[in-house]
Image 1 (tube, rainbow, N blue to C red):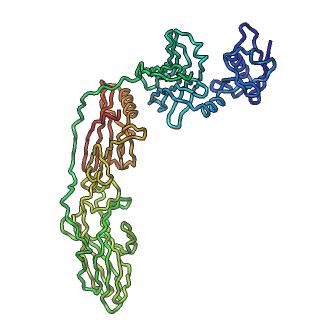
Image 2: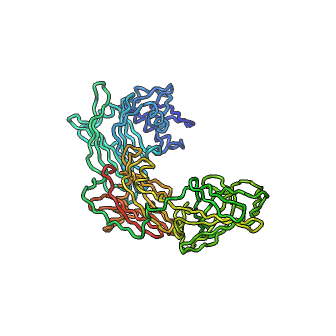
Image 3: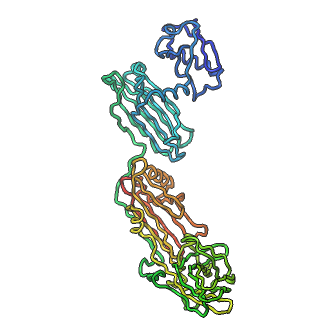
Length: 552
């Protein structure tokens, strides 16, 4: 009985070649070698197995040849394992993808796929089973077939190439591939694949033949069965729009006084004179110490006396809606930038002014707001709070060491700066698909959701939704709509609004909230639109829109 010496990594075995008539093929010897090596080689298993045999000097042995015709008694044979062969084959073969059937899997979020194609250099057809997409792919099985192998197939049968399935459970996924041949010469490959979230398998057939150059060439492909029946397009009625609470006025605010054109100056007992040199900087603060309105003004301070003077006290007052001047905390310092003032000096800090000198001084008034009523969406809007008049008057008073005072009244204005669909589109040079807004008249802020219809990164149209408060810009495409339809159908019953809890947002106090709902037709197996609710302290909006047909 002839025998061969087989060497693979550190394992060396002698394997006999069975004497029979007809002589065993190289493919049979390969199977015998694989069976023996599994007893001794730790790196061989179901995922890594011998796929071909080569001579000791690297020549490939054809699997269809009789073994005794190409292997001498006692010759050394080198088996090539699948993992080594697979990497080399893919790198060197310049594979042509003929057809890939991919099914999204919403259970584990790993798409399942089968791919069939051609290796032109070796004129082989390959079949690949895998999971995942876009750089996170995993090949589960990979097979190649030459013309001799395909010619040996029965002319009137469907022959299994291979199959694979996931863990055994109620929704297990599976995939298989079959060669189809007929007496008329038809050659085709049938691909069957079902993900865990598919109600039934996707079945597609690709036909192939031999081209003028003697190599395999692809013909037509046909979808035999859809895994998911296509949705039915009908007319859908959206939920009624709901709007509660007052809205912010977007015009009619007073025109602010420009202090560079109309000089706002103090009335003086003291030789110390104040002149406003910049607009009042308004901001709000809400923290552990309470809610505050902060109004800071930059002044030019002139000492008109022939002698040095000192400011020994600064006071600030806010004019309330009832017409009374209310005392505020006062600090002084200097302006560092458009939005930052360094004002750490207390109200009674001594500020020395040389005779006939001119200097700059920033004075900050800090006025307490009703802690129980005030809550801001942004945490610190640069506006005068709605509990104060608009315009808001601030009176600053300075006293010198002789007890004489100088006073000045300035005004802070709120301009109409709320975002609208029109201003948003103009600022960003985009055209929005839809716009939803809800106002808070206490903090004078607007919550808004812009929706943009745009090409996706896979050349598929998507809807992009900006959830500013959550710092997220999720998008909606065909796969997401299919997943939502699958999730909604699993809910059972006749529920046609499926809450998208992963999209929702709420601030820490629960004052402001955004919720999203997919609008689902169980009869049509389709998510056809979205409902959005916005809640502020003073308002509530519920609005809906239909999805454009080109994202399905």
